[in-house]
Structure formats: structure tokens, C-alpha cells
Image 1: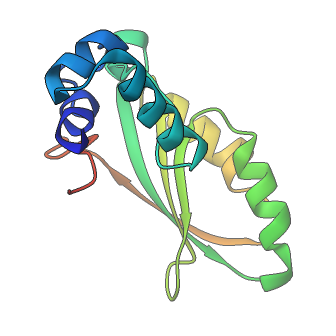
Image 2: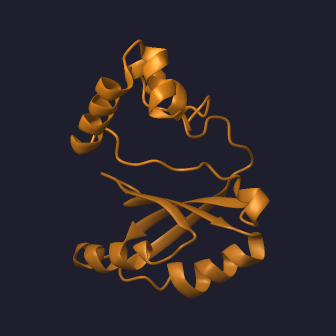
Amino acid sequence: MREVLRDAETGGDGRLTVTELAQRVGLSAAPCHRRLRELERAGVIRGYRAVVDGAAVGHGFEVLLSVTMDREESVAGFEAGLAEIAEVVQAERLFGEPDYFVRVVTADIAAFQKLRDERLARLPGVQRLTSTIVMKKVVDNRPLPT
């Protein structure tokens, strides 16, 4: 079943019905459905989503943002503020420098500049923002290795 779920995750056929999945793994529908629900309950499968092309919906400009904090006590406020910004599609707290790595999508460079100056730079505890514009995605939405 792991290989079929991996195929579905890569976009090969992520909209399989339980019946189709069962046929691929050689089970009847009922046991396949039970195993799928067990994976969901255990948190192995955390959800389902469609992968949308950002450029097709007006968010084709992508920036990788390194954030260095000046105050450790500002972490909670920074993270809460970051979570409220819809253009932030990924954020990770790191050990060492920088303190955070943030992926931001906007329509264009002007929209990013406005977002950076008016919202991101004003979040609690921000000392420095370093922006790197994404030229091309080489590996994207790769499933976890089996």
C-alpha cells in the first residue's frame, strides 16, 4: 500500500477512489478503507490537498527569506504574526543563523517589496531580513522517501 500512496502523493493519481486503491494493492475495498483510516487516525496521513500552480493564480513571484531575530523573547509574537500573513507559504525555525527560513509568494516584486516593508519587517523581534528571489524550482512537492 505504501507504493500506491507514494504514487498518489507524487501527483500520479492522487484522486484514487478507495476501490481503485484496493485493486492496485490487491485488497478488497473494506480492508483497504480500514487501513487508510488507520493511517489517517495515526497521523501518518495528515490531509489531502490539490497542488496549485502559483503563477496560474497570480502568485508567480517567489522569495526565500532569511530572518535574523534580535530578541529571543519575541519568538512567540513573531511566529503568531507570520502565521497571519497569507503570502507566507512555509516557515521554519532553525538552529544557528538565520533564525528562520520563510517562503513567500506574491504577484510580483512590487507586491513583495510592499509586503516586506509594511508587514514582514515590522513583526516583533526582526533584526534583519535577507531576500533571495527564486529563479526556478528544480525539485518541488517531492514525497517523503519510502
